[in-house]
Length: 247
Image (cartoon, rainbow, N blue to C red):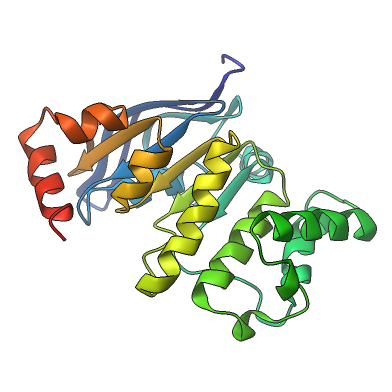
């Protein structure tokens, strides 16, 4: 596998029972690229991104992440997850731990980093997402937007090769969305390799190198943002954009 390729999916398909949720997906993400995946509810976009760190198992085709093929070997899965940051709709923070300890836990438990080094990393990345003053609070004391920024900082503390965002703003109140998108846009500007499933088309315009539109488990269209928004080629893409941009 080319060292520049961070994720490579070849002819990937997946079923839930008899329902085919992913159909012959081909996708390559290179180092430093930012891809936004959009599409209607049920199009398979979240399932696809969850396949990239084996939270979901694909059934046909091949997925390789940082040169490691994802299959049923748990050793491979564990190695990939060390190098893939994942930010979910819901923050999944440990409620009994402070913000600082939420960020220190992964490097200490999974990578064997010392407590001193883990604390330095945690403070650095809390500063990076602009909430260092929240370090000694518990998640319940934070707003939704702040909790999501802690979740981003926690992933960054693992110094991942790629960040996956699965609709990271969909559970937030509207006034909190912008602070999370600003953090993500800043990461993109700094060259973070990322795949983001989102309906936030402003973020796609500002931060993506490519926008992928999925429908019914397939990649229907893929283009740079300026082409994607100015001249979509597929009727299904045109309909989706007309609906989402009218809101």
